[in-house]
Image (cartoon, rainbow, N blue to C red):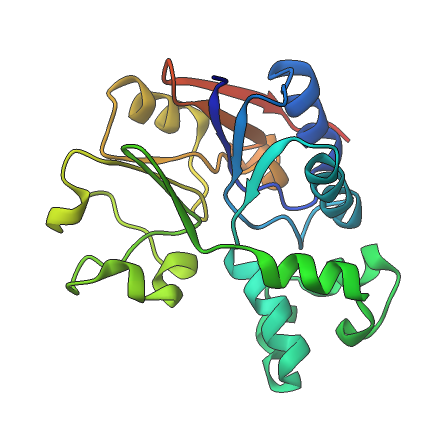
Length: 223
């Protein structure tokens, strides 16, 4: 039985992502790796990130990529051009540039199928993995997909989450804050440490969480 790992928002940071997976984690096929969404937009090598994820899966690695709000904005723009302004406001044009296209409908069947296949959340034992969070105000928090990609909470009171740990991305946190949440084994652990935002903003790390020993493994952004 391998490790259960999670990695936060990648946003086109391909070199950092690869260094984390191959260098720091030395990912093995018996490991389970869950990716928390937001692979696209903003960063320098978006297509390379998506290709790398697909390649890992095709090579037999146990990788579960979840969807983020950026992937859903891409799909929304593909299905309805009226959604393009929201996506472009969130730097969706960087994804088109990385794929060498000027129209999202030219993204290519392989990539479209990849984005459409992404799950909104995953449960493994006492861990819930999600990009954003869950709607804590309704009886069935798993019925609200919008909240899973757009919202996050510091605590949950719904009985379904009692004794569970929620690991999410979406809202970048400084590395020291995330390390403290991991150290104290908080109910909710945010692991987006803002790789794409750089050190000048107080972020600049791509982080993985090893849930077995509750260790956070960060890699500083590298071009």
